Image (cartoon, rainbow, N blue to C red; front, top):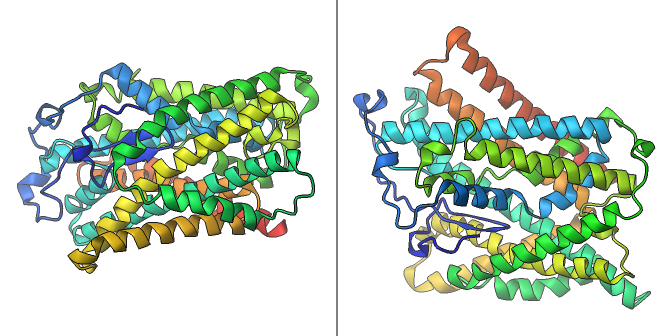
Length: 464
């Protein structure tokens, strides 16, 4: 993660991934204003030439930032995803889902670039893009622009808070294995472990200055790489025959596979901040393009990790492959300790963004003199809620599938398809209205993933 961004420009569209902080440095002053008719027509305004960046990123730096945002602890969940698909079905499923996710990211970025040209602003974040699309879209939708932006804002906030709850579950499961190894029959329950983490989480989440949190990103990255290498060592150690695992499994488990892969792979919140800070943003899309190259690498790495991990551990593969490592061996114990530290720091970084979103949408209801105490209470309440959710939800892999199916399918699949369709509605839907059919199909697929994934995940959770 690069710390070269100007933190004073950190705004509502900033996103902290588990690998770092990506701020958007654009202040939009046209959102919510009435758009004149001639503004809707194609403009000669070039948003790329009007971006004033203090520290623009090269194509290689942007590739590295986007890659780091997609390659996090989610890759450790891929073996658990493959057990809900099978070896061959998992490989092809990962490739297909990777292509779909990449195309939806393309739609979001392309729409953001085009609506920036229409709105005459240098660049836009996710929620601002959605608002601008509605403002400049068909007349019946324009009055909904502010409401939709607020909805996307809150959806992003709860998506990240849901990921934070997943992190707490991984923390609890990892620490439980370590404690159980040294202290048998200790009588510690899941609730006790959650309470144990609650106090340090409450302390760290009270940090409001980003510069005190950002340095932990680099440390977490190093720990994740070391953990990944140790996991590969154990996977390749005593590796079984490839035909020991089924090529496909019951199709009813496929929604869990899809939800887990989308959760692991989807980095929809970070793509626009990365594109907005590029020296040559026109290189982000296209072929090969930064996006296509990055997602190709991501899909290959996720596919390899999922395939090898599933062949090695089969149906025993857990929500994080680190949980399958033998606790009695020193390298495996190191991996478990590393993942605990990395995920804890990731939690504190991720938690910053939803709090910024929530505070921005609620501070007008609080008197100025009570702002500090109100923020402290707000942070404590939401941190406690994530820990409470972790104490309530029992299994990591089911919760990851639920989070991916519910939140990431909406922000990563449904919303980009719909806003691209709305933006194209009065500007041309292509020959034979192919944009209409294609975007509708993507939105329908995203809805299918949301409904079936959530349903299957809830069934799995309730059956435990």
